[in-house]
Length: 217
Image (cartoon, rainbow, N blue to C red):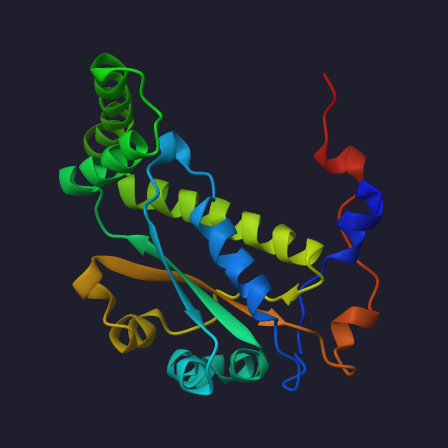
């Protein structure tokens, strides 16, 4: 598929076919692409929940009640639902865990290289923590890099998606007991296959013209 066709083909699915399920081999691929999502300095400040059972989706759907009830069918009718969570803190324990994994995976030729990686990553984390004082916002930016990776990767697999911020974060955090793992929910993404009556699939895609958003230097 040409890149123009590819960009125009992906869209937000508003209604999922509850009878269709994502094959397990593709679910495994989704788990892998989430794990290997990019992040600044490879800090990986995230945790992902993947619900593929009715019980799991019902737990997530508890956060789509009241004002957010319009999003409940997307969660309940999807094949799988991914919850993107952002860490509440990047402490030394997390930095050391990332460093140990990099070492295990063979990224360092010697101790000096290992120390340099840790020092560089710590510099940026501390800059956002103490100087810019936006570390939570910075970490959530990294989570949205993972979100972008998911959206375009699943479209290549022929899977539809619907990224959603329309949910009650407090309810979902309590339901998944996120405080115990030091995280906060950021975005929900139902995955599956669009229903025949998905109105959004029949609408033309609309974006501002290139000249309005692109400046060529």
